[in-house]
Length: 127
Image (cartoon, rainbow, N blue to C red; front, top):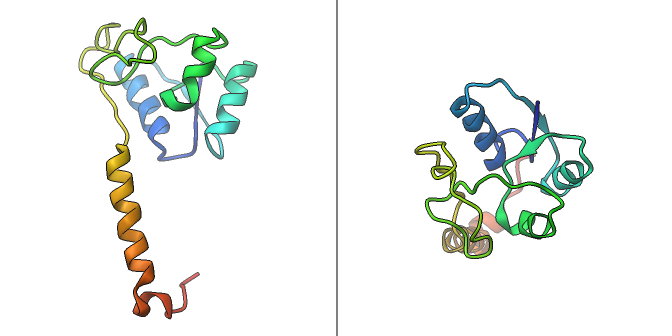
């Protein structure tokens, strides 16, 4: 059985690794260069499963183009209220989240502030 991910170390890669541990079954990781190609191959049946974010998978789930088993959040999603949490589905304590938007905005603001500093801006980048 294969599980797709958006690249080694991506949140959905780590989710898949934790999932295979939780179900005590070896899965074959299939890394992609991002979520778009991953979702295309999941919809096309080239891979068996993926841990994908609700922002990109709600449409295909609602259209019944893919089968969703659970969400990895502590509570059910408002956009998919019929979908159980992983804990409700039998994976007790299985909870995975990604950075929230406020956290990402703070990090983005910090990077922008650093980039605007003259000592950073005028320094050649290491490549």
